[in-house]
Amino acid sequence: YWDNPVQTFDNIDADAAWYVSTYTANWSVWHATTTLQFKDGNSYTVEAMAQDAFGVFDPVTSTATFLYDTNPPQTRVTVPAPDSAVKSVGGIFGTSVDQPAGCGALCGNGTSGVQNVAFLIRNNATGKWWSGALFGSDSWIGQDLSVDSPDFAPWYRSAGNRPNSASNDFVSGTSYYITSQGWDNATNAEGYFNVRGSTFIFDTDAPRTWIS
Image (cartoon, rainbow, N blue to C red):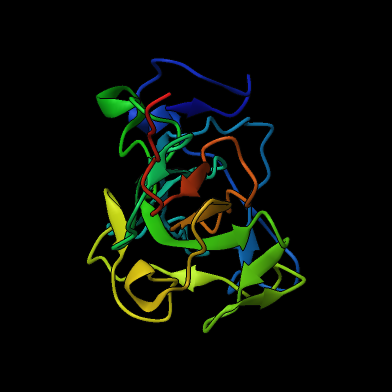
C-alpha cells in the first residue's frame, strides 16, 4: 500500500493506508496529490470512501484500477522481408508487440495492448509514396494504409488499395521501402521510419547466360 506520510510503498496495514483528500469548492469534486513515480507497465488500484459530518464512513468503497503505460508498441515489417529480392507481392505482413515486452505477472496487466497498425510504401527510385492508386505522392503525410487483419500479432494487408504485383504496380529492378507504426490502447504512438521497416527489390527479370 502507498504510505502517504513517508511517500513510499511499504507493508503497512490496509486500514493505515487511508489518507484525506482535498477539495476546491465542495466535496462533490475532490483530488489528492502525491509524489508517487508511477512505473511503466504496472497496474494500480485506487480506493476511496466518504465520511459524513458525524464521522460515519460509507461502508462501500469506490475502486478504480488502471494500467500505467507510457511506452509505444513496436511493429515490424516481415513480408516482403528486409534486404530481400521478390518477384511477387501478394500482401504486406508484419508483427507487433506492445511495450514493455516480457513484463508478465511482475507488472500486473503488463501492457495496454496494440490498438492499431498502419504502414507506408515508397518507390525508392522516384521517391514517390503509394497514394492509394499509384506511387504518386511527394509526401508521406496522409498516405497511411491500414491493416485488414483481425488482430495485430501478426498483422497484414492483403485487400485492395495497396500496390499489387499482379496489377503491375511494381517495376522490376526497383527498390521499395515499407515503414510501419503502431498505437496502443493508452494512445502511445510508435512513429514511422523506425529501424523495423523493410527495404526490398522487386525483380521479375530472369538472368541471362551465354557460352563464351
